[in-house]
Length: 354
Image (tube, rainbow, N blue to C red; front, side, top):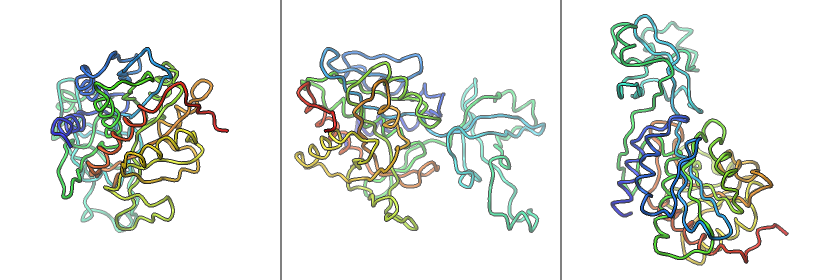
């Protein structure tokens, strides 16, 4: 992967963006694509929309959401500890002991998620393996409530401590790959199309608030009114211990993006992606999706009178934890797939499934 692309990915990953608080990440996106876009705007919801060839036809939307799961401060105890609720779906069992950052008005405040150590638990507590968020708290080192309130206010958001770490074999680990890699891939596809002529009007969207109900995709797709809409998200890799690929389909790291098939996917869009991958010898995998996918593709598909939807997914290990893992090659190939597919879309293509 090009160094400038890796730098973009790292900057995006290190910009906090819990659902509803995506502005730092969106600033990174806007800076990256300003020179790549014929038009660039941010809508009232916070979606960043980069447009290539706005006068073309038909309208095609590529969408990857930039929001990540996080926490919101709900209460400050007299002792200065922060009680919180989750923004999006967080497994409480991976929170205990995590390093976090709270984003206050005066800046970032480091903290840790504390829990009573096993040594101090009563036998009945020790035997109960279930951890609830209600039993956890964030310790920022404040001596009391007054000291904590100088740094943090009710309603401030928090994330796991951000940062991308290199593993072996082009693997990278970080919180927030779900789904900043989607926004990354969409904007990388736009970069790959620089200087190329396309017939369609291409709208590359870094959407917001996917983790709390596909909200940004709903509003941006309504405004764009595309004929074709392809979402990029992460999917569960199955190539590690205790994961049964026979239940969901086998998805391996480093073997290319996953192209979805199922009722959420327009058959002709799905076939376009498959044909493009085969013709251009782009590695890919097929992911069976027998119902609504829970991704931006779901919202895009049912916008207005309906959109011909597709879904391309990046294999991801340990989703919604502080140690999500992706393969850089899968990101590169996903961007190549989208860019090549877009060049094939014109008014002659019919996406009505017959």
